[in-house]
Length: 71
Length: 205
Image (cartoon, rainbow over all chains, first blue to last red; front, side, top):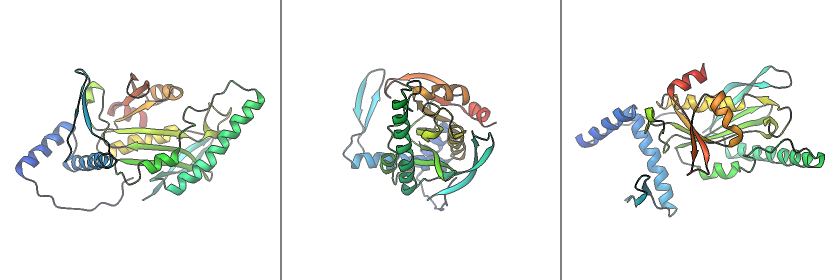
């Protein structure tokens, strides 16, 4: 089902690697899968922002919304 | 990029399994020809029924979906994948899924990644709500199995989620064995269903 894949070497700082390892553990996914998910989400968000949309985070219980700043 | 593999549907006329093509990465051209075949069949069926005064069957709830627009809306976005099942020279079903942005809701797997089925539809001539005897069956099952398979390949262990149209609720609950999490106020009050890895394994068995 998957298409051809390319290989790349990635250099991360200790802090970045720690985040990647924690996400990998929490989500029960490989580090590659985490980075793939991050790329998919980043493209989705970037695409919507480019169309003029705004990204909000909502707290259902407190019923408040806050705008997420994406630089 | 499009990929084809072999799958099987059941021909309702003969009761036999027939070979079909599972398409990963349905092209714009394939979507165009699908709409060109599905739309007139749907309109003709509705018109025939109206003239015959047959009010027992109701049109599929997804009959207003415009697959050209859906295809265009997700063009170039790597989180989305469109699948199709082709048999007998025609598209028998289409499905659009996303692989990011829909974390699981069931308590035991809350926040975990899953494949979310945005849209899935069978051709109008396969829809029991439109025709008395459908042409092919197993289309929905093949497409949902494809979503589960994709989920496994992505490392999501078969977890999938979707919002069901009322006509399809029984299919997801009984045939697919998914957990019903009730109506979702954020999604037109549609019922939300989710599949766990254990349910996925049972479904594929």
